[in-house]
Image (cartoon, rainbow, N blue to C red; front, side, top):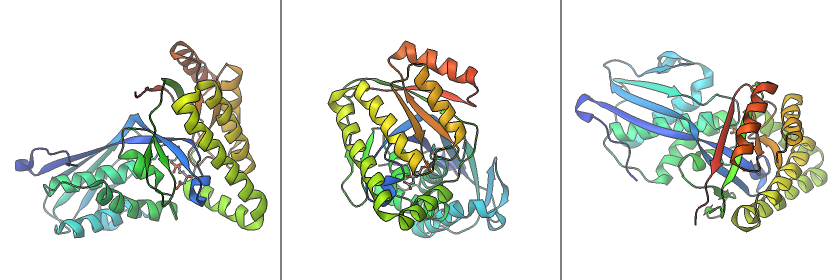
Length: 320
Ligand code: PMV
């Protein structure tokens, strides 16, 4: 794989990354169950690395200044930058790293993972080096581990692909080829979530009631297996039911909040075939499955009027 090669004569290099959505399997995937995630190209990150003498500096909407004074919330990306520079045998100086993102953070859309992937890609490009997916994931996951504690790895992986991904820890990756177009709507509840807190709360629950919670995680795993079948063969009506079932389990795990529930309920009332939270939850976004393209546009409009902070209709295209 080659990094985006830009005008190296001017010592500027760019790395880009799209976002991701978890269709089904979030939280369960941390505990060994499978999950399905979809690349989400409607929002993304661009990282521009430029030769600027002096210490390494960041320029982003959340921080502007020297890397060594970056806030704690940026510690993940700082660690990824340092490790990538070590790996590339580049000096830790004379760089300005500009990060431009259209991914709202804390909304379950993989903002931190996209930033990490885009920044690592831009540093490879700056060094005029190509990279393998494994190199990219290893260096970006350094940031994700700081941000999320024990990430499953699904976010960074999906951000490096163009196809829906079947992901199960320590298993080979499988790319799903949808047999039909699936029309989804992503809607932002307006609340910011925190992945680390949500993941830790499920882990605590699992420790306190292992049998019951393990049962729920396994049920999500079963639904995820069925969702793969729905994408590859059985179709949208079945997929919709599975999304609704998964939402029940996520509610029982305590990761869906009132605003998410309200949006999900509204989407279903307005004819969505299924709807659930996407990502870590307790804030963030929902994903709803529409009947077709026209319904998707109508539902998106209605969700906007109902108060969703942002709404993105998008189609997962058939791949034959
Ligand atoms: O909200 P996000 O995009 O950070 O989703 C993380 C998905 C989880 O399953 C909750 C955590 C993980 O590492 O897989």
